[in-house]
Image (tube, rainbow, N blue to C red; front, side):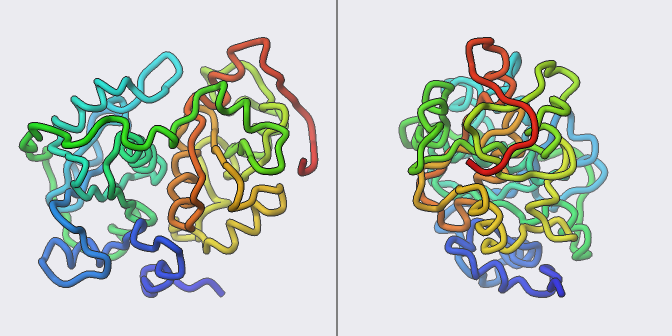
Length: 308
């Protein structure tokens, strides 16, 4: 029987880095200056992430939260992360330094995870996710606010070189170098129908199939769901369950592991979970299937297949 995560926040502390996933009452206590476990060392911000204008944010959001449009951190044509110069400007605009603790949440967890992963790449040292996102805050019946986000005070300087963790973002050549190895895994965080080439998963991605030699890391029922990683309430499944799921596909914690999906959102959520689980050598192949499939020279595969 599943324990309701909202009633048992201590379950998060079974993770090697439990502090990277926070729960609603923790944020509420922090905002009300009550003692919390693994408190931020310095300044902190709560920020909602979403695609486009903050329509749902306007109606109801966590008190004091800022808002980041995902288009501030990724851009067309491939929806890869923006340049380091643009990241530096975005962080300054939102008043974020390398030593600011940033607590991200979203209506969709993977939107918050996408921004969180890119902030970590940039060099923000302490980025956390609200486990289960807005849904858990709403279910906890905690206070909410309406209206536009307050204008943040810009940061004059990030205080450290950007990128601070370049190893978190892999390009296509680096991703290719992980294929067909026992000490590494390039991991497809896509639905099974996407992995076997029944569908591309996206209206704007025409090629079907997946990267030849990639290992299946699970995801959900389609390109917008992540049920394989979630409890029924949308919080993260137990880390041991996720590790067992990956072990079936020879994805192991001592390997160099890079996650990818179509364009980066689902893989970002998985990256955040792997980090919370204590997996050390993990990253994100930012281009994903969108970039890989655009080059006809890249090996692709379709059809049912077993772990490699």
